[in-house]
Image 1 (spheres, rainbow over the protein chains, first blue to last red):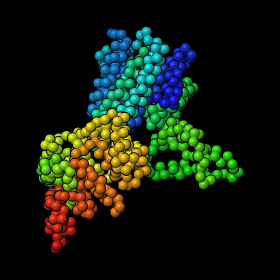
Image 2 (cartoon, rainbow over the protein chains, first blue to last red):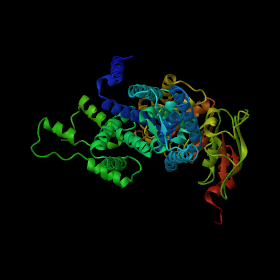
Image 3 (cartoon, rainbow over the protein chains, first blue to last red):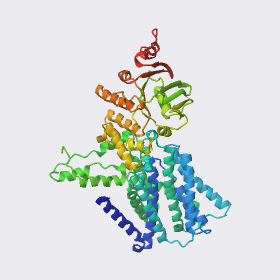
Image 4 (cartoon, one colour):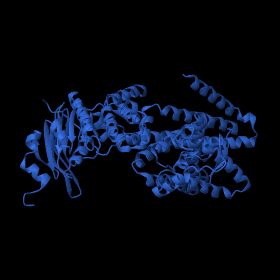
Length: 355
Length: 242
C-alpha cells in the first residue's frame, strides 16, 4: 500500500464512520432525507455498474426495486423480516437471470422499452391480483424496523456496492465489461463470452436494486403496487447517473446529492415544479451527451467551447485566471469530469501557449 | 506435415447469394497460406466462417482433428483460432493494453489480472509497441493500430492466425517490417492464413496459395505457378473477348 492509498483508506473509513453516526447528529426529518439519499445512491451506483459499462440504458430499476419492496410487504406478516429480505434477494436474482437471458441479446432501444414495459407489467399484474384475489389495494408494513435501522442497512449496502464496483475493475469480469462496452465484436474475438458477462453484471446490479427495495419497504408503512413500481424511480436514477458522470465509480454521488437536495427543496415549496425541473435536467443532459446526437450539433458545441479571446486590459497573472475561466468544460463526463478538470488545472498548471 | 486446420466443404449463402461455396483447404503449423482473389470473391467471408464471426450453412472446420464447426466465436478463440480484421477492431476509448489484456485473460491460457498486465506488456514489447501501451486507438498511427490488433490476437495464444489484409496500405518500409513479423509468427509454428492483395508479400511469404473467385476455389499451388494460371488471370482481368 502506498502512502496515498493509506490516507485514502483512512479518510474513507472516517467518512463511513461519520455517515454511520448521522442518526445521532440530525433530526428525524434530516434522517428521513438521508434515508432517501442513501436509497438513491445505492440504486444509482448499481445502475451505473451495469449501464455504465455495457451502455445499455436500463429502465428496469423500478421493476427490481418494486419487486423487493412488495415481496417484503406481502410476506412480512408470515415470517421474520430478514427472511423476507432473503426471499426478495432470491426472487431478484431469479428475475434478473430470466430477464438477462431473454433480453440482453436485444439491442439498444428495444432493451430500454423492455425494461420500462417489464416494470409496468408487474405493476398491472399485481394490481389485478390484489383487487381480484386478495380484495385489497395495498399492504401495510408494520414491523419493528425503524428509520435508523433502515438507514444503517442502506449505508451498509452503499459501502458494499462501492466495494463491488471497486474490486470489479481488477477482475476478469471487469476487464471484459470495459471491452464489451467499447467494442463487442472485438470482445468476442478476445475470447470473452459476451452474453454471459452481460447477464452476470445485470444480475449483480439488479440484486442490489431488489435488496434496496426490500429494505425500504418498512419505511413506507403502506405500499401499493403503484407506489412500489413507480416509473419515476427508474427515470430519476438514469438522470442522476448521467448528471454525475458514469466513468468514475464516485461519479453518481455527484449526481445523487444535488438532485436529492433539489427534489427536497422543490417538493416542499413547489411540489409541481419538480417534474418540470427533472425534465429540464434530462433534456440538458441528453443534449450534451457525446453520442446519440448528430455531428452537426457536436461541431457547434465545439465552436461554442472555444476559449473566448482575451479582453483588453487583462495582463500579467490575470491572463492565467482568464485562461482557466474560459477553458471549455466538458459536460458529457458530468460533474465528476468538471471536478477532475479543475483539479488537474490546480495541480499541474501549465502556462497556456500563444497568449 | 499433418494439417492443423482443415476446412471441408464450407458453404455460406446470404439470401440467394452464395458467398462461399464448398470451400476446402488445410494449413499446417508454421505454414503461411495465401488466400487471394478479386474483390467480392468471398475471402473475408471465408475468414469470418473459420474464426466463427458468422456461422456456416454447411461443411466442417477442424483444428488438430477436433471439430469446431458448431462452436461460437469466443470458444473458437480458446481452441486457438484468432484473427485480425480488415478494418482494425480494438476498443476505441481504452488504452491499447486493455484490449491486449482482455485477450490474455480470456484466451487459450487464461491469466489473472496482474499476470495478464505483465504478459500483455511483453507481447506489446515484442511488437515494438511497449511505449504505446497507454495510448488510445486514435492516438496511434495506422501501422501501430494494425500491430496492436495483432498483439490482441497473439495474446490469446493462437495456433491458427487469420490475417485479413494485414499488410495492405503500408509504405514499402513498413511492408518489410510487417512481412518479417509474419515470418517470425510462422517460425514459431503458428499456421497463418493470409488474405492479401499485395502480391509482393504473397510471393515472398506464402509457400502455397488458394485462389477464390465468386465463392469457389479456382486454383491452388505455389504462388509462382498459380499466378500464371489461365483461370486466375481470367478471374482478375476478365475474358479475352470481354
